[in-house]
Amino acid sequence: MALPDQIDRLMIRLLGPRLAALAWEFLRFGTVGTIGFVVDTAVLYGALALGAGLYGGRAISYVTAATTTWLLNRIWTFRHRGGGQQVHRQWALFLLVNLGGFTLNYGAYAVLVAFVPLVAAYPVLGVAAGSIAGMFSNFILSRQIVFRAQPGN
Image 1 (cartoon, helix red, strand yellow):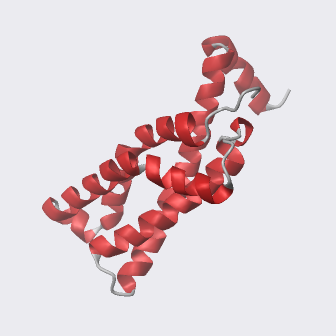
Image 2: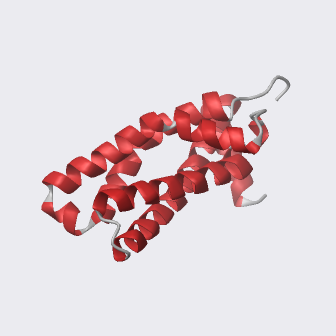
């Protein structure tokens, strides 16, 4: 038996099938979030190099990362849940319902950049803090609203 199957059986035994499935979704969501963090950071540093500034550059990098995470969550994390919306509407809904997470994410970043010189010098630290601040609300909102299970799923 392959290691992933063994881990899955262990999680089901420890958590039960429903919580094990939720845990796997959260792990996939976290993996996608990590990829989003890398995209966010790379685009931010690219925008800074082009003169966008710490705040404008972060707005650009956030939208780029949010689009990336929406797509990856759609095709991997929540693919079994459907969602029922057209692609462009689902993307817009994802951005809309994740405004709470964005507020936490960007707020943490902005406060740290403004008041912690180390973060202003190394904005990646603010991006990381912001990502963690918004992750839990984004997971709940994405799962319950954007990628909600359709009847029969």
